[in-house]
Image (cartoon, rainbow, N blue to C red; front, top):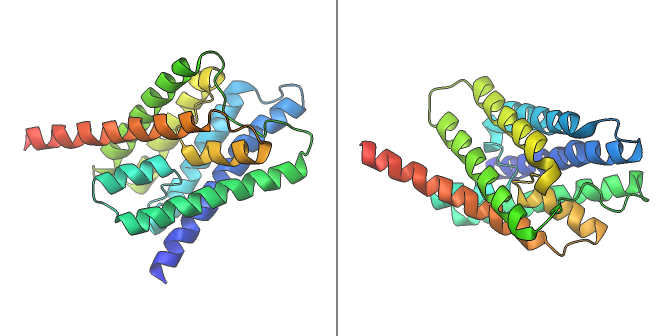
Amino acid sequence: MKDRKHYFSEFIGTFLLVLFGTGSIIISEEYNGIIQEFGIGIVFGLTVWMLVHFLGKISDCHINPAVTIGMMLDKKITIKKASWYILFQLIGALSASCFLYVLFPDNHKLGNTLPRNLWQEAFLYELFLSFILMLVILISTNRSFLIKRVSFLIGFTVFLEAWLAGPVCGASMNPARTFGPAIVSGNSSVLWLYFAAPILGMALAMYIFKFKLSVLK
């Protein structure tokens, strides 16, 4: 029963992240840029902030396969449980994009993340952004911060990265966030990039963080 709560938490968390985050992108496109990049960044940041605050005590609120894989590499979650987490995250993202497609059937991107220029540039951006986000998660969750502070730090980081790098690479930092819109919109040609870069970036952050801790001991 406990694990079911964890899985449902990951499903509903990722569903809401994609619903509100990519929903803000769609609304901005549909209504002549009413929200703009800054507003979209705020929506993503606030959504993550609230989700970590309310769901963090249930499943740690990964809502991101790359985060889950990073925690699995650190043996904070078993391979079996991580696999279920990722499955429910992807289902949550896909469900949210299907719901948005029903609301906005004429929108062809559905908030999908795509490189603005070269895919190599987008790959490096996504790797770096994911690296920074994972470091913030690790540093904040390995200190005696209150859950409110942890949720704020993570949410604020997502806001900054989404605002500043969104126009360049989409600032996904989350394979599930890209998976839903890519599959439902039918534009999955660079989906691999938004899986590989965040996973590599967060795995690298995990190993560097662990190495630093081992050196300091």
